[in-house]
Image (cartoon, rainbow, N blue to C red; front, side):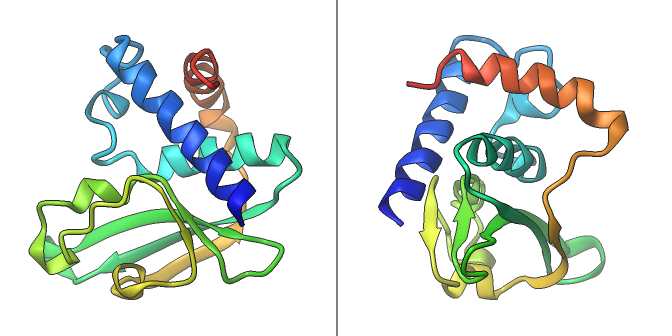
Length: 147
């Protein structure tokens, strides 16, 4: 578990450094990282972990319904199917209904925050063909800052 946390933290730090360096200025989604980036960030993290021999599932959930609905995405460790890996939870730090969740990196069992979401998708990590080029570009931008 410590190794997974170290790797997730390493990847999140690389995203933060890439953002400060201006890597995402022209990117309509990642320019506001972590807000609205959970799906893409999870996909990129899944690829990074896969390269290290760690397989994950993509998970997507929804809190609420209608106009007030809030979606969120994270990873689930395939080995035990219980460990959550989330590197964008801090996008909800200003939302009382989502417990003012402020963890930029979370690795662990389902907590009160993740329990709020009704899971609508959980499957093997894969990137759609139409997104592959964009994801490869983002991954290259981030990888320069992995230490």
